[in-house]
Image (cartoon, rainbow, N blue to C red; front, side, top):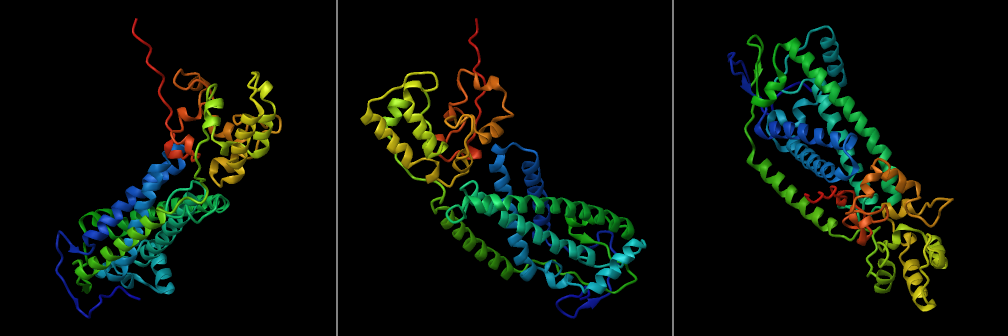
Length: 388
């Protein structure tokens, strides 16, 4: 399909230093908003520590909103924003690419064929990243609108897809920037600036399709209705309890007897066999005699067995369930714990406001609930020594 308007008005216009309006304000806001959101997700996804997941997630939600808007605007927006204005045949696209390679490019008021391919490719990739990200967030992190429906195993399996598509996004971004620079050089028009001002220059020697960058009020109404509907659905789904998190009441006996000496660990942090081993060896409890009368010990063991890691489908429970062969009774000896805490200087654990590697609640503000969300991690700064 050629670059034609949605009515039959084709006129010849005079050249203007300012050019003619092509990109409406919503399209320009979408474009630069997407640039910002994608940059944040890539930086936080590839470079930031895991406890910055909240920033990554909110930027991902922003991408989801922007992509949804662009799909709607592609159907109901102004002339050059509509997908129908830049759907080209494979033959037309190939001819355009060949022309670019020869240093010649036909002028298009809106998206040219190569640009059109990039638009559709980016939308597909971003939509895939959004969906896979929501699946990972729900299954692995027990957060977001899918937390009540996606198991941990599905979330983990989706990580590789999400990562692979993210690399594909990096490739598309590089191709998009290079293509924009090449087209700008060939056409002698700053296409990046055109996406800021909304205006493009048209060659006076060719018939010009009068751009219609006016905003359709009906389109805005549709966007608002869909946005409110989607927001309501998101709120309802997010309110659904996470399928991997167990709601339980802390056991007072366990909290008092075990909490007297150390942090009373959430039962989800070890499997049933490990808890049974710990309770069977209280007379030599990591070098201490922590013996209890049989009634108290049995009460605590029943509580630990009921809420051990086998009862949970959380990230912490699934990973800490795989205990150390040499030291199956120690949480900090598991490969998962060592990997997640390996980059933390051991001096941090020696701070007076932390005390030891086993004081989970010092850094995990949601440790008592058993969630251990990345966003709830807060490593306290060393206390300031008193002035002498």
